[in-house]
Image (cartoon, rainbow, N blue to C red):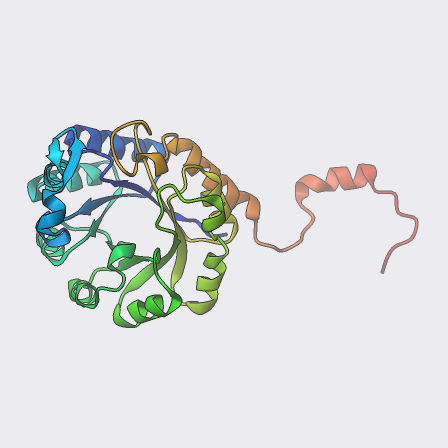
Length: 278
């Protein structure tokens, strides 16, 4: 029986509020998750000036820059969140979206894993920089071809988890493609295979567990109606999600047919056999 490493993706659902971030860490803890994951961006590296100067209404102003600045934590805040996460007994993970953010996180925080967001899978310089951290890697495969995934895997030295993923928020049922987990298991037998969920329900994660995943990541939120692009693809009832995954792991069993001790009184009572089969 595989026991999944369960990652609660807080991402940017904290909306730049460290109090909300800590409540989400608490939610992950009380629900039985193994880790929380945040995202870090240097907005001037990730976005063009034209994008940042574009109009976008948000609680922080009327430009895209104001919105992105509003949801970004400083490195001091990340250090505080790392400390708080570890007091809760959870692993601390960050997806860095650019080299500046990677350097900041690597030099100031002790992450359990570096997570490669699907958007960074084809960035050779970024992947090579991850190798120099000597940290284990989690790689998501959204928006990527098999050839691109193979190329990334040939560059990265220390991938522990490779996650099936579709990068739409929320993902349509017919585009989740859980059977890709089996494809990855066949192609990469020496890597742990998992699933990164962007659907707005729990069934895909339960299905991933049934297919033998070893890591399940899903976005969490306090309230799906809150401001934010990821809220609609997030899970509010995190405890139900985790307990469902653990239940699926339990009911799968080991595939070996036995007569259980609990069956034997029933066998004695109900089975009427005049002739033995063998």
